Length: 254
Image (tube, rainbow, N blue to C red; front, side, top):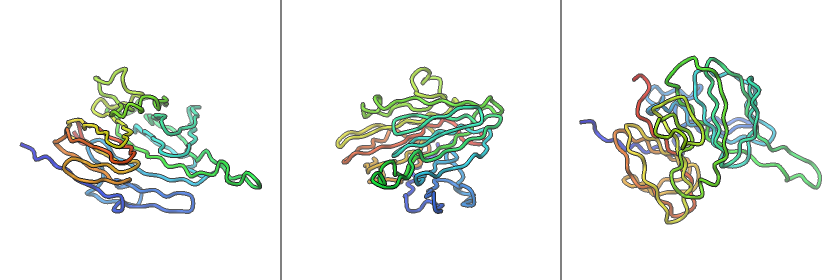
């Protein structure tokens, strides 16, 4: 029998990239922050918690063979790519980019600085979580999808945001090209709780607020839990909170 593992990762222990326009905290190895013992969990390779100042962002850069899901927590983000897709991503809007055989894209804060009487208008940093999952088939055609799900999140349940799992066909907001992975978001009000899926690999990230995690105690913004061979725990809120949950039935190298 395999041993269940509940691995709590605190926000302050994450590697951090801080430059003039970007403050990024990495749940896994990213860029020059390389740790051979922290490269992924299940199928999740990247969980970057990014803050970008107004008028700045990631200039055009390439990706290949990766499913990239972006979830905005605060502010708004402009996406443009080499296939002609463009859009503004904001809280409650699910967005996925399939890099496939190769794609170029940029992501920038949709705010800008004004002068004079309106100096404080449109002057907000954007905070978003960007997550990368490897596709189960390499060399697919690049693609893009975004869907508004703000109303669904009012339920307080774990809402399937992005999934390639057959059981979520027609239920998730957006589709990813991996049949072994699904991402959920729950917006919890005080006193409300959700039950986590039971799967070989589950990743829980606290995007906002604080929650009580059964078997692990209090988790604050930026904290995460990596579950292996376990699931079904309750996550409850004593204050407004938002969590992002990945359910995965395979891992890299399978």
